[in-house]
Amino acid sequence: MPLMLSLLAVTATCVPSANPDNTNSQVVEKFFTALNAADQEGMGSYLKPGAMFVIGPGDQLELAGFLGSLSPGARIDVSNVKSAEGNSVTLDFKSSEGNAGQATVKLEGGCITQLAAAH
Image (cartoon, rainbow, N blue to C red; front, side, top):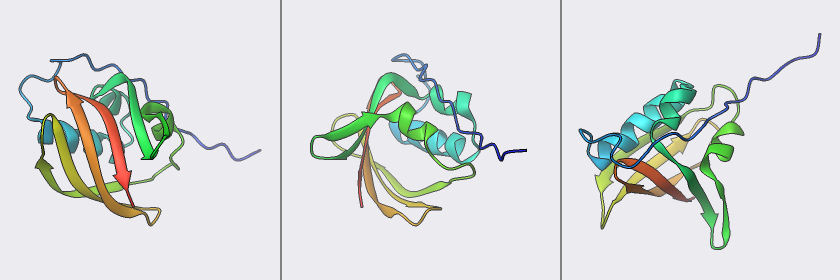
């Protein structure tokens, strides 16, 4: 029997103001908690449809699609989660695949609209 890998199928379902009781930092922390638990519905509940993952200048892809490409069991641990200018949060990250760096997460009404990572 061939080996089957189960990829995450994340559907962005967050609507602005869907998480009114959470600060932007709490939304980001809860999103990564859901990611590390492979909770597809949980991740999607914090992503605004069309949220983008910015890889570099002029290089981006839909964040839900990027999440679906992660290896099963992949983890991204975050620390130093802090509110930044506007509706942004900055953080340090380290992935189980060996990537580490800083990231900026932009939010709108409690929904993640963009994740930009710097390695």
